[in-house]
Structure formats: C-alpha cells, structure tokens
Amino acid sequence: MKKHDLLKDGNNIIRVLEIRPDKILIIDCVKRTMPVWVASSVLDAFSECTAEVLNEAMNFTVTDIENLNPDQKRTMYDRYTLIAPILPFIADERMRSKVISSIATEHNISKQTVRNYLCLYLVYMNITVLASKQRLDDDAELTQDEKNIRWALNKFFYTTKKQSLMTAYTMMLKEKYCNGIGVLTDKYPSFYQFRYFYRKTKKMQNFYISRNGLKNYQRNNRPLIGDGIQSFAPAIGVGMLDSTVCDIYLINDTGSLVGRPILTACIDAYSGLCCGYVLSWMGGVYSLRGLMLNIIADKVDWCKQFGISINAEDWSCDKLPATMVTDMGSEYKSENFEQIAELGVKVINLPSYRPELKGMVEKFFDVVQSTYKKHLKGKGVIEPDYQERGAHDYRKDACLTMVDFEEIILHCIIYYNSQRIVENFPYTEALIAENVKPYASCIWNWGKSQMGANLIEVGAKELILTLLPRTTGKFSRFGLKVNKMRYHCDGYTEQYLNGGEVTIAYNPEDVTFVWLLENEIYIKFTIIESRFEGKDLTAVQSLQTAQRSITKGSNQDNLQAQIKLARHIETIVDNVGEGIDVSIKNIRDNRKREQSKQHRDYMKGAQS
Image (cartoon, rainbow, N blue to C red; front, side, top):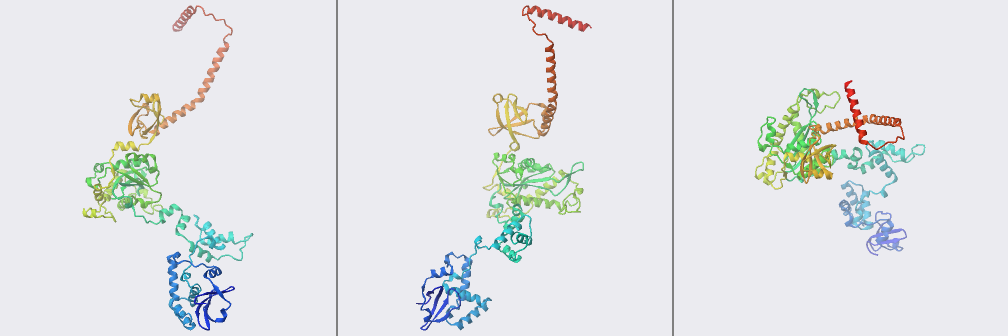
C-alpha cells in the first residue's frame, strides 16, 4: 500500500491520501465525504483497485483535457484554484476547516461547495473532473415534462397565431395533463417551469420566423452583416434598378385628379450617380423601356426640354451599365427585360426583401422624396398620417401636373448627382491623390477613366428593338402571319412557299410593322391589311374578336338557309317526270332553237 492507491472491499472503494505508522488518511470514493483518519488494521480486508473499476462503479468517465471546450477548461482551472490552498493541509483537520471557511468567505460561496470540489478532486486525483458538464440538447436528456413543454411551445407558441406563453401553457395542461373527463391530474409542471424551459431554449431567429414569417424576418430582423455594395461593385458599371410610388398626388391639364406617379431609376452602385430615370403613371415593362432610353440619352439635351441648363460633367452618363441589379419584381423577371442580355448586359435578380443589397437606389428615393416634400407641403404631398382615421385628405391639395412635377424631380436629381455629398464613400489613395470631390458626378467622371469601368454603348433604335416583346411568326403563301395579321417584305418568296416558324419582335402600340429576328439582325415587315395600319394590338384584337362574334352569330342563320335551299331543290326535282327517254341527236339544232326562243322571250319582256 502506498499513497494515492485505490482499495476496494465489496461495494466500498477508498483512496489512500496519507500514511502514518499507526493510522491512514482515507476518503470514501462512493459516499464522497471529507477525508478521515482510520487505524491501519481497518484496511486489512481491502484489496487493490484500479481507476477503471472506480469509474465503472460510479458510472463516471474521466474526460481527456484535450476534449474539453474553452468554457469547460476555464471552469476547471477556476475550481482547482479554489481548492489548491487546502491541499497542503488535507491531513490537518483544524487547518483544513479554517482554510475552507476563508475561501468560502472570500469568494462568496458556501463551504459545502468548496468541500464538494475538494472531495471530487481527491476521489479521482484528476483535475479534469472539476470541469463543468457539457450540456447536450438531446431527447435522451429531456424528461417527459420537458418533452411536453417543448411540444406545447412548438404547437401553440411558435406559430403565426402569436399566442401568449400562458395560453400555450394552458393548452399543454389541457392536452397532456388532463384525464378522460378533462380533470387536471395531481402532478403537472408549474408555469414557472414552463417559462424557465422556454427562456433556456429560446432562439431569436426561430422566434421571429415562426411568429412573424420568413419574409418579415428577412425584411426587419435579419442580421445586416454584409460588406455592402462595394463587395460586388468595385468600379462603375453596376446599375441598381428599382421603382417607387411618389408621395404626391398630381392632376392633369384639365384639373382632374390623376393619382400618384411612379418613379423608376437606375443608380450606379459604385459612385451613387443616377444614370437615368423615368416618371410614369404605369410601371412594368413600359417604364423599363423608358428608363433604358433615358440612361443612354444626352442629359444636356434632355434637361433643355424642361428649360434646365446643366454642364456635361454634371451628368455625363449616356451608356448602359454592363451589370444591372434588380429585385424580384415581375417586370424585371420578364422575358422582355432579360432580352437586354443580348446587348452584353448581365442581369442579377436579388432575392426578395434584401434592400441592403441595393442600398444605393433605396437611398436615392429617400433623398429625392425628402428633398421635394419639404417644399411642396400643401401641394398634394402625402404626410405620414394619410392613412389614419380622420386625417386630412391630401388628394384635395393636388395642384401640380406631371410636367410640373417632372421638372421638380429633374432639379432634385441634378442636386443629388452634382451637389449632394456622398457620405461614407470609401476613399482610396488614388481618389485622394487626384482630389476627387465627394459628389456622385465627380466620382463617376473619375471612375470612367479607371480600369474596370464597365459601360456599354448602344443606340436608341437597337435598344428599343431589343426590348420589344417577341412572339412566333409563321410563313405561308399569304405572307408572314403574326398575331393573326399578315405582313410582307420583299425577298422572302421562298420562305412564303416553304413555310416555317420564326422569331418576331413586335410593338404592341403600333402593329404597322414587325421585325424578323434573323442572325441577330432585325428585318422590318409591313402589314398587308391596310385597315389595321396605325392601330395598337389591343384595338386590332378587339376588331378581330368583334368580327368573329358577328360571324359566329350568323352561323345558325346560314345553316338554316342551306337546309331551306336543299328542300327547294328536292321539291323541284320531285316534280320532274322520271323515265324520260333523252335523245342525244341534233344537239346543235336544239340549242339554236332554244336560244332563239329565249331571245324572243327577252324582247317581249322589254316591250311590255
């Protein structure tokens, strides 16, 4: 026997801590009580034991220190620091008790806690036993009550009905802790236990999504930890597209209320410059077509139309961004807009409710609307209370037409581009060296000359044809048939005779022409039916529908007339005698006699 040996006698296991000639200091490893001195003869019946036998008897596994996480290691060393001053006095009961009391007072813990740590260490003589247990969120560790609580939280609390904790608790008792006649059983968890389990297992992401929905979470609660637009827009040429309904009511030229206009804009992600805009009454594909044309337009000439004079460097954008970032709006996902990829433009559709990924265009709308609203109060501008009961009817204040408002918007955009300071712009050494002013137009003008600038030059006609809707046309002997109308172009005789289907671009606003897309070249075809010239597709389809309706309404009369005709013919035929022996001789003489007879009958009729 030597110091720190393990000894066993039946179910009793002890560890030797000190050895003296007449007595031995031991600790009961099973009961885990404080060490005591016993006579040497007491241990005569004990035999040697191993650590494995102790672990098996105590149903305990000593963890290797490398398998502990940082929190467990910190706890282990903190607890060992508490008991380390006691270990030199482990054989002196008086000094041991005194040190334990001192440690408990100093660290504001109970003496029993200190004793528990000390005994645990002395039993296993391994510092790792002082580490805290790692909690595993596993069903095997949950009691039946905890499982019931978790079930009730998932079924009644984490739902879009947004029930309270008390309601979920009550529903749990009704479903899990009542007998067949609805009487509450004797044992059931208290509300405090229910609330404790909820707080212990609560995860904010699960809370927001389950009660408010995924879309609301993505819009209002999702962590915004991205690096922003600079991560994918390191140079100019990334345009961000979006639309918004302006906070103002407008009238027409006669003074009648029209409503609120829609502002669609393209903002360069790198510089923040407004590349183009369109103000319209209707969004969708038509507004996008106008936006694209405005992007490539000469802005000096455009502003002159509104009596505004600007310098070319204030708004020097007349090319398309090579990358366009949009949201999941239907107009941006349409085939018409995706056709712009034929010009070399890359279209990126962002997921829903991710406004921070196109923060530049969101900021543009905020700046422009806040700029004009403070000057147009009482002119139809909407205030935050416009949907509240009893609020002022701002429609009655409307006094601006679309032309007036567009001139105001244009002034706001010019201010936004060339005079507003771009806050928090990531200035590089090159920008600082060239003393580039913090205006969007200055950053844009500097960026155009830098490597990586990605802009595409395109003509207005080519852009319009690219964005026109497309359909399938079919060649036949009657021409090129598109949308149930016929078109013609010289030089396509063989195609008319051979037939076949082709891709056609058409203008819904004027059906006079369509364009055959052949080898990426647009070939103009002119309508054959002149009655449709200058009409839009809706009007033509209305005419065609009306014609079919009239024709369909006359079908029954036509069938009735055919039946009546057949009856008349049958009546005449029935009156003709049967079995007549027809002679085929002297046909010419017979014909002359009948002709002479018919002529005399005509003359008699004229004279009478």
